[in-house]
Length: 160
Image 1: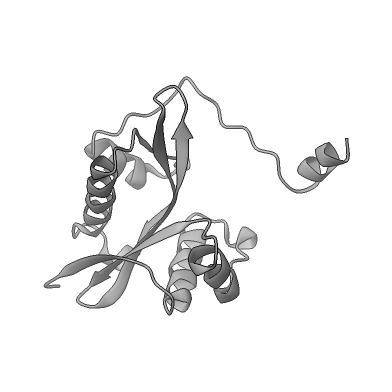
Image 2 (image 1 turned 180 degrees about the vertical axis):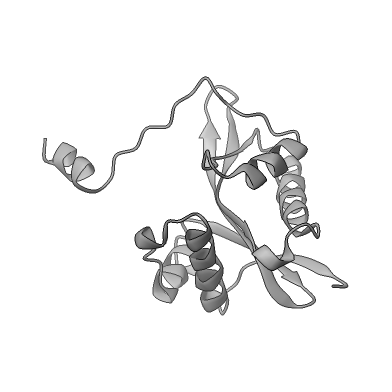
């Protein structure tokens, strides 16, 4: 491998984005929850009001990794934050600096834009990713618990 290129995803990348995120779902043992289609990507990533941003890593011109993220707002800091929703490098291409290049690129843009923080979640069993994040000097946040409403629980609450 001679070169790593990081670029913002663009219209026409829908198939690559779906393929990479499907691989992530398989890696995370969550394939049964994966429903993303090319049409979803066209609407939510590149439509009139994009809901998520996406960066792609290319190794020698071939898709190698992906990050999806969106802006949050840190009210106490009175500044925007970034929530990194998905972060994946193809298994065969790991340990080559691709993941680090993706994170460094996003961090550089965040600092330039005055972003207060970058945050993400990791599955507790995913020791390789945890080790990678710790190598970046990312801090594990233990004093907060993540709660989620989805599916029937969300619908039931909405019904009152």
